[in-house]
Image (tube, rainbow, N blue to C red):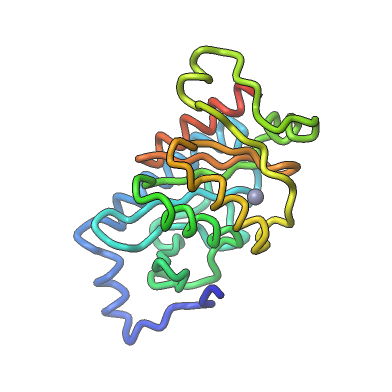
Length: 204
Ligand SMILES: [Zn+2]
Protein backbone atom coordinates (compact mmCIF):
# COMPACT_ATOMS: atom_id res chain seq x y z
CA UNK A 1 0.00 0.00 0.00
CA UNK A 2 1.18 3.46 -0.77
CA UNK A 3 1.35 5.89 2.06
CA UNK A 4 -1.00 8.84 1.77
CA UNK A 5 1.41 11.49 2.97
CA UNK A 6 4.77 12.21 4.48
CA UNK A 7 5.59 12.00 8.13
CA UNK A 8 8.42 14.44 8.38
CA UNK A 9 9.03 15.62 11.91
CA UNK A 10 9.48 19.19 10.87
CA UNK A 11 9.37 21.56 7.98
CA UNK A 12 13.13 22.03 8.38
CA UNK A 13 13.72 18.35 7.71
CA UNK A 14 11.52 18.55 4.63
CA UNK A 15 13.48 21.53 3.32
CA UNK A 16 16.77 19.80 3.99
CA UNK A 17 15.71 16.69 2.17
CA UNK A 18 14.26 18.59 -0.75
CA UNK A 19 17.61 20.22 -1.28
CA UNK A 20 19.77 17.04 -1.34
CA UNK A 21 22.73 19.01 -2.67
CA UNK A 22 20.67 20.03 -5.66
CA UNK A 23 19.73 16.48 -6.69
CA UNK A 24 16.01 17.13 -6.25
CA UNK A 25 16.14 20.32 -8.29
CA UNK A 26 18.15 18.68 -11.08
CA UNK A 27 15.75 15.72 -11.23
CA UNK A 28 12.77 18.11 -11.29
CA UNK A 29 14.28 20.13 -14.14
CA UNK A 30 14.77 16.94 -16.15
CA UNK A 31 11.23 15.81 -15.37
CA UNK A 32 9.76 19.16 -16.45
CA UNK A 33 11.76 19.35 -19.70
CA UNK A 34 10.74 15.83 -20.76
CA UNK A 35 7.10 16.38 -19.72
CA UNK A 36 6.98 19.60 -21.75
CA UNK A 37 8.36 17.95 -24.91
CA UNK A 38 6.10 14.88 -24.67
CA UNK A 39 3.09 17.12 -24.05
CA UNK A 40 3.94 19.30 -27.08
CA UNK A 41 4.21 16.17 -29.22
CA UNK A 42 0.80 14.90 -28.14
CA UNK A 43 1.94 11.96 -26.03
CA UNK A 44 0.77 13.30 -22.66
CA UNK A 45 -2.80 14.63 -22.69
CA UNK A 46 -4.49 15.81 -19.50
CA UNK A 47 -3.34 14.03 -16.35
CA UNK A 48 -2.88 10.72 -18.22
CA UNK A 49 0.43 8.87 -18.22
CA UNK A 50 3.32 9.46 -15.88
CA UNK A 51 7.05 9.96 -15.90
CA UNK A 52 9.45 9.02 -13.14
CA UNK A 53 13.16 9.04 -12.48
CA UNK A 54 15.58 8.10 -9.76
CA UNK A 55 16.77 11.10 -7.78
CA UNK A 56 20.54 10.97 -8.23
CA UNK A 57 22.53 9.79 -5.22
CA UNK A 58 19.44 8.73 -3.25
CA UNK A 59 17.13 5.72 -3.14
CA UNK A 60 14.15 7.95 -3.92
CA UNK A 61 12.06 8.01 -7.08
CA UNK A 62 10.46 11.23 -8.31
CA UNK A 63 6.89 10.89 -9.63
CA UNK A 64 3.86 13.12 -10.09
CA UNK A 65 0.91 13.37 -7.72
CA UNK A 66 -2.24 11.56 -8.83
CA UNK A 67 -4.59 13.65 -10.98
CA UNK A 68 -2.02 16.34 -11.83
CA UNK A 69 -0.89 16.70 -15.47
CA UNK A 70 2.82 15.87 -15.88
CA UNK A 71 3.33 19.13 -17.75
CA UNK A 72 2.03 21.17 -14.77
CA UNK A 73 4.43 19.61 -12.24
CA UNK A 74 7.02 21.80 -10.52
CA UNK A 75 9.84 21.01 -8.03
CA UNK A 76 7.50 21.85 -5.14
CA UNK A 77 4.58 19.72 -6.39
CA UNK A 78 6.51 16.60 -7.44
CA UNK A 79 6.68 13.74 -4.96
CA UNK A 80 9.59 11.61 -3.81
CA UNK A 81 8.78 8.04 -2.83
CA UNK A 82 11.04 5.50 -1.17
CA UNK A 83 11.45 1.96 -2.60
CA UNK A 84 8.43 0.79 -0.59
CA UNK A 85 6.21 3.50 -2.09
CA UNK A 86 6.04 5.73 0.95
CA UNK A 87 5.96 9.46 0.20
CA UNK A 88 9.10 10.97 1.70
CA UNK A 89 9.29 14.25 -0.20
CA UNK A 90 6.30 16.50 -0.78
CA UNK A 91 2.64 16.10 0.12
CA UNK A 92 -0.07 14.19 -1.68
CA UNK A 93 -1.03 10.86 -3.18
CA UNK A 94 1.41 9.54 -5.77
CA UNK A 95 0.27 8.47 -9.24
CA UNK A 96 -1.83 5.30 -9.30
CA UNK A 97 0.90 3.71 -11.45
CA UNK A 98 3.62 4.18 -8.82
CA UNK A 99 3.46 0.42 -8.11
CA UNK A 100 4.77 -0.62 -11.50
CA UNK A 101 7.30 2.22 -11.68
CA UNK A 102 8.85 1.07 -8.38
CA UNK A 103 8.66 -2.57 -9.42
CA UNK A 104 10.61 -1.83 -12.60
CA UNK A 105 13.29 0.06 -10.63
CA UNK A 106 13.55 -2.91 -8.24
CA UNK A 107 13.85 -5.40 -11.09
CA UNK A 108 16.18 -3.26 -13.20
CA UNK A 109 19.06 -1.47 -11.47
CA UNK A 110 20.10 -0.20 -14.93
CA UNK A 111 16.90 1.83 -15.33
CA UNK A 112 17.09 5.49 -14.27
CA UNK A 113 13.95 6.86 -15.92
CA UNK A 114 10.52 5.60 -17.04
CA UNK A 115 7.91 7.04 -19.40
CA UNK A 116 4.31 5.82 -19.36
CA UNK A 117 2.22 7.58 -22.02
CA UNK A 118 -1.30 7.23 -23.39
CA UNK A 119 0.08 7.71 -26.88
CA UNK A 120 -2.81 7.71 -29.41
CA UNK A 121 -1.27 5.71 -32.29
CA UNK A 122 0.12 3.16 -29.89
CA UNK A 123 -3.29 2.70 -28.26
CA UNK A 124 -4.89 2.34 -31.71
CA UNK A 125 -2.40 -0.37 -32.68
CA UNK A 126 -3.15 -2.36 -29.52
CA UNK A 127 -6.83 -2.50 -30.54
CA UNK A 128 -5.73 -4.76 -33.38
CA UNK A 129 -4.64 -8.29 -32.65
CA UNK A 130 -0.88 -7.76 -32.46
CA UNK A 131 1.12 -9.52 -29.78
CA UNK A 132 4.15 -7.44 -30.63
CA UNK A 133 4.69 -4.10 -32.32
CA UNK A 134 5.80 -4.75 -35.93
CA UNK A 135 9.23 -3.11 -36.23
CA UNK A 136 9.33 -1.94 -39.81
CA UNK A 137 12.32 0.38 -39.87
CA UNK A 138 15.99 -0.34 -39.10
CA UNK A 139 15.88 2.40 -36.47
CA UNK A 140 12.96 0.76 -34.67
CA UNK A 141 14.47 -2.70 -34.90
CA UNK A 142 17.86 -1.53 -33.70
CA UNK A 143 16.65 0.61 -30.80
CA UNK A 144 13.59 -1.28 -29.62
CA UNK A 145 14.58 -4.91 -30.18
CA UNK A 146 11.21 -6.38 -29.36
CA UNK A 147 8.07 -4.64 -28.07
CA UNK A 148 5.47 -6.92 -26.51
CA UNK A 149 1.81 -5.98 -26.20
CA UNK A 150 0.74 -6.73 -22.62
CA UNK A 151 -2.92 -7.83 -22.28
CA UNK A 152 -5.44 -5.42 -20.82
CA UNK A 153 -5.78 -5.10 -17.06
CA UNK A 154 -7.46 -2.32 -15.09
CA UNK A 155 -5.06 0.65 -14.92
CA UNK A 156 -3.55 0.93 -11.46
CA UNK A 157 -4.50 -2.65 -10.53
CA UNK A 158 -2.08 -5.15 -8.96
CA UNK A 159 -2.64 -7.36 -12.00
CA UNK A 160 -1.45 -4.63 -14.35
CA UNK A 161 1.53 -3.84 -12.10
CA UNK A 162 2.56 -7.51 -12.10
CA UNK A 163 2.36 -7.85 -15.89
CA UNK A 164 4.30 -4.68 -16.54
CA UNK A 165 7.03 -5.51 -14.03
CA UNK A 166 7.26 -9.06 -15.34
CA UNK A 167 7.67 -7.85 -18.93
CA UNK A 168 10.68 -5.75 -17.92
CA UNK A 169 12.48 -8.52 -16.00
CA UNK A 170 14.24 -9.32 -19.26
CA UNK A 171 16.95 -6.69 -19.22
CA UNK A 172 16.93 -6.39 -23.01
CA UNK A 173 13.36 -5.08 -22.81
CA UNK A 174 13.19 -1.28 -23.21
CA UNK A 175 9.56 -0.80 -24.31
CA UNK A 176 6.18 -2.48 -24.01
CA UNK A 177 2.67 -1.60 -25.07
CA UNK A 178 -0.39 -1.94 -22.85
CA UNK A 179 -3.52 -3.10 -24.60
CA UNK A 180 -6.18 -0.32 -24.79
CA UNK A 181 -3.99 1.83 -22.59
CA UNK A 182 -0.64 3.05 -23.93
CA UNK A 183 3.07 2.37 -23.68
CA UNK A 184 5.86 2.09 -21.13
CA UNK A 185 9.53 2.73 -21.94
CA UNK A 186 12.62 2.64 -19.74
CA UNK A 187 16.17 3.92 -20.08
CA UNK A 188 19.48 4.75 -18.43
CA UNK A 189 18.15 8.35 -18.35
CA UNK A 190 14.64 9.79 -18.51
CA UNK A 191 15.49 11.39 -21.85
CA UNK A 192 16.36 7.95 -23.27
CA UNK A 193 12.96 6.61 -22.22
CA UNK A 194 11.45 9.74 -23.83
CA UNK A 195 13.17 9.03 -27.16
CA UNK A 196 12.05 5.40 -27.07
CA UNK A 197 8.46 6.46 -26.34
CA UNK A 198 8.52 8.70 -29.41
CA UNK A 199 9.98 5.90 -31.50
CA UNK A 200 7.29 3.43 -30.39
CA UNK A 201 4.61 5.99 -31.22
CA UNK A 202 6.16 6.78 -34.62
CA UNK A 203 6.41 3.06 -35.39
CA UNK A 204 2.78 2.44 -34.37
ZN1 LIG B 1 -1.95 4.95 -17.89
